[in-house]
Length: 109
Image 1 (tube, rainbow, N blue to C red):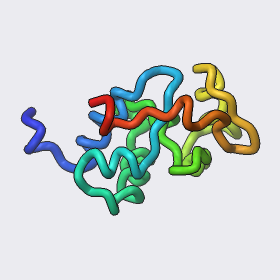
Image 2: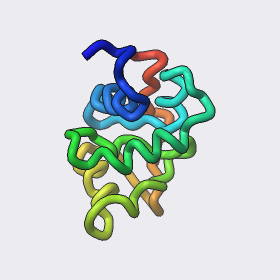
Image 3: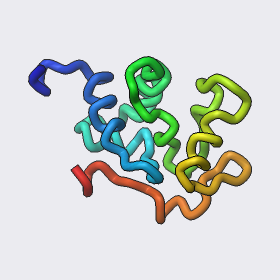
């Protein structure tokens, strides 16, 4: 499938699948990379619908490193547990050392 024929959600999934293990990005960073800087909320909607698409949605957080999408994961703290299993420190639903683990698609793709 050619990239220009993909819908927005599929483009979001392509980017999210490239987030390295142990790193995170933000909804806004993905939106900006896709040329839709004001569409961070749409990226969030895409992540919510990604659970059966082999997309590491747990690696996408808000611009401050907060786990704002945690309620879309099964279990009480699954998003946090997945991040911590990759070595990312989370305290009070916020990623610690966010600048160190942040992965910007604009600089890496």
